[in-house]
Length: 353
Ligand code: SF4
Image (tube, rainbow, N blue to C red; front, side, top):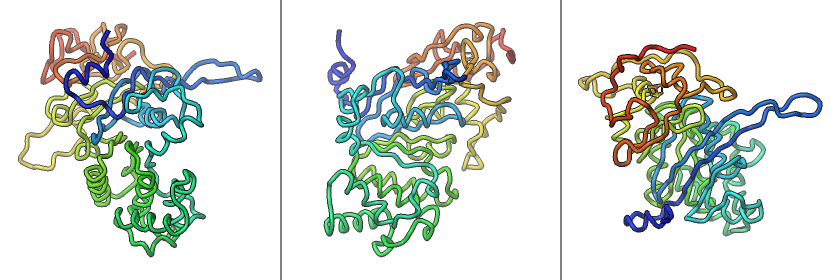
């Protein structure tokens, strides 16, 4: 049987930088003196995707949907429960910390909160230069010159290397985080809500910087956010997550112009339209909170909030299927082909368990 990599090269597509297949991360819940496992948090529950060199995959969903756990598991900062992760075709899932060490240089992370992710007792120069020391890449004068160049590249001044995190604004602190992530010339950067803590005006500057750096260094990004408006500008493709699963995955234009999953439709309804003459999206209010990932609803996890839910949605799990080229959706509404715009089937009705 032809492997996925062989199929891709036969189709003339480049080998993906990252391939994730059936990734799961279930955290055990332990109770009692003997720490017996009494349940699991199904944080990430069987997700598959790839990221090509120089590509940005946006990953979107409400708080608690598992996107941050997915990002950390891909980087092996958290060990997966099941599934495979391949970097340039090489499986890294089972590698021990020593074997992972050289690969750590290739995969970096930018955290959400530039206030708490930087060590307040280290100068900005030492924060950015620390990975060069840890990986024995550059020391002394050479390290200083490299750090100064990184400062300039992210829009900071080299004389600011001696300053401490509290002396910088929020946007500048995030630039320090970006310079640190760039220090080891990575191929993949996971941005875990990297602009969510910033003012809207600063968000655009940081996103533009990330896009410039991507063009310059052919970087790949997994860009995690809870807001579709944030990932719209930077993403080539977007994966929408709900309760540990990817429910829709496609290119940016298709997702914004032809959302096929009711959850994506609801997230899009909350995105402001900049052109006042453009047709307004129907306002869709999602009722209720995201259910607990400890006891996800049976069938389609979204059925307790879905305005299109049918009886079968309560029991039958919809598979993530290719509905049209490059467009993957998990929803029973499209069992006989893509339905757009979404329309309520006759037996649909709000289904509250
Ligand atoms: Fe809604 Fe059913 Fe589709 Fe789930 S499978 S999103 S409940 S219509």
